[in-house]
Image 1: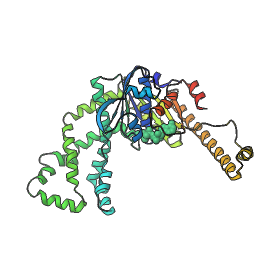
Image 2: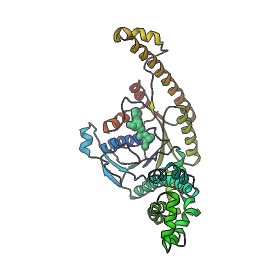
Image 3: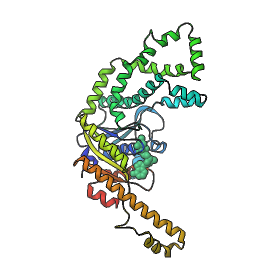
Image 4: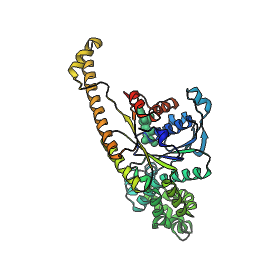
Length: 380
Ligand SMILES: Nc1ncnc2c1ncn2[C@@H]1O[C@H](COP(=O)(O)OP(=O)(O)O)[C@@H](O)[C@H]1O
Ligand SMILES: [Mg+2]
């Protein structure tokens, strides 16, 4: 089975998609590092890196600028890098839910806003706009042509499909009524900005419990600049997603639900005419022993060493449970493999520690960049 470098052969855009919490950010960073090690000039666009991972990539602050990971730092971590690794943290906008949570005075006010229909439209469009912004930045960097390969981490949406729908949802929102109300010169914004605005705003403030309009206006000002030529760009972004230069990695966990979601996502990708590169099943548990585990026998074996009957019985049970999980993981991965019909599937084991630095990423790369046989021998 192919390794990541074979999957990415001849591609210049790699999009890591999948549900939240499965290891997308980790995988994106590890793929970028591995390809840089092999000699490419790579930039990873991360969205929500854990603080320690961001620090270790030298991403100290938010900002839509690519910065190069210090070659000396790579060397100090024992990483021989023939190419260049660059990283960028996309400015992930606060979601409106957080805004409400922060400003609403009490639970009742919060519920009132969350139940508001304009609010609901705006917030779902904003959630989509984060995805759209990510693609927009990807498109921009791709057009500049400074890098051999761009690796895009995707926002932590609950549903991987949100990412594919983002351009369309945003277009719909822009053309919809609620936004027009705010941005048209004759719209609500103009009216409230005129005479008597103070009264309206004060009233809104009383009703909502916080100054919603003031918070919104900043967003809409930034947003309205994007509207011109928007559809044209959305079209070109869509074309890039479908281009032969682009490929998708589906990152998922080995549990039944994420596996099901990946099967579905894969079919959607294919249906939408996008290139599927590989599935990366992350945090897979592998069997520690061959054959059935008999807890009593294990307990008897370790008892002599541990001299603590309670501890040895818990250890034996724990091992039995772990083996059960490992069997389930294998079964689930098998299902995905079947449904992918021969397309690459790469398993990465559940490591003992979190992956939050360059050494951790290099450890992940031992699996991502190994052929199937080597990978399996490493994992077991
Ligand atoms: N193979 C792995 N083994 C152990 N921990 C992992 C592995 N992959 C990721 N992690 C850890 O899991 C957490 C979530 O990973 P992250 O990449 O941030 O997920 P996502 O971007 O999908 O939300 C992080 O703390 C990361 O260090
Ligand atoms: Mg992430």
